[in-house]
Length: 306
Image (cartoon, helix red, strand yellow):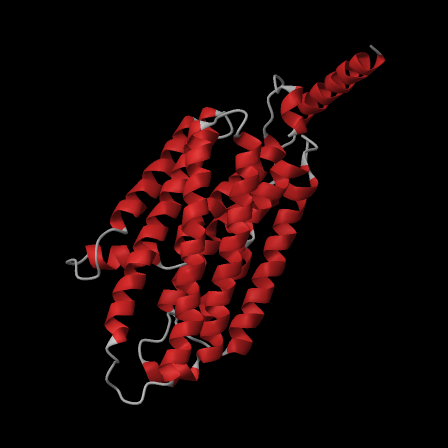
């Protein structure tokens, strides 16, 4: 009996805390910080495709400055946790962290387009694809925690999203290992400018792997967005936007490189290895923002124990 009374008192205290937290608002600087966070992937793409390769001393310095800025902006969002639930915060952070790492690619530019240049920058290629493997693993762990958080509230879309991520991430890792390690070593042993007989076959195989895993990641994003919409964490309009963009990207990704323009370019852009994780990144930023600004007084206390 005493335990029941204690739990009720703790529940009342939690609800009172949530009500007071409803009045927490962002300052102008905090809102600008969130806007900057949302723009990071797009600024990275602009630099990577528009500026191209620059000296490592410059792009590593820029990446470090950007990382410090992102940490400074994220710290108040992480520190202020009205729910007191670290699982929710950790899930959002794991979705965000890959795009704390990926901006280093902005200075690397596109992967080299010929073997000579690829071998000259072999160290960068190893780093590029190893960081992509690390980022994809962190994103997968974020979706796993998000699944754990949502599974008792919404089962269908959450389970579908987690299943698709579980299938796609191993394929993604294999694809990145092929580009970053296997292909680099193979290039070292090419004796002539002509490609060996196995090379076109491997290209087609990993093109198929890339197409499948990228589309599955986009569809998984749509499933989690539907789950967040159905459970009330995202507004219907936001949930629909995530779903429409993700499903359109999954569809565009199916166009082969031989497709006429602009479909070939669109297909290339949506399948660049870091790009499928942009939607999860934006999802993580929004989840932290919501956790810091908007709570309903009718929140079930049991939900805070996941």
